[in-house]
Amino acid sequence: MCVGIPMQVVEAGIGHARCRSGAQILTIDTSLVGDVAPGTWLMTFLGAAREVMSPEAAARSLAALAALEAVMRGEPADLDAAFSDLIGREPQLPDHLRPIPELEA
Image (cartoon, rainbow, N blue to C red; front, top):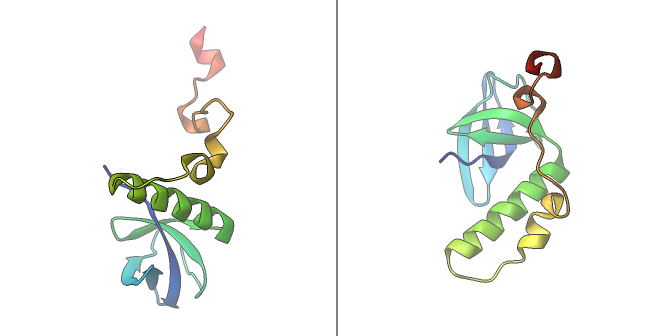
């Protein structure tokens, strides 16, 4: 399973950036997202940035990851708070995975 990790750019270069997640600093490939500035939040997978994130989206993702880590350690976690965007709604497929009505007939 691949889990995306939000990371904040601390130093930008051409095609890469030094990014922080907690105490860890890694060099991340930014070819897919273009130039980034220090302070920018990126969703990263396997050493590459896949998306530029808002600080709010990064905070939500980090809270969800922290809750999952707590559960994996056997500690209590407020999953309703960590996944508040999923509470009280039906899951929705992204647009690119939804059926095309005119092709279903």
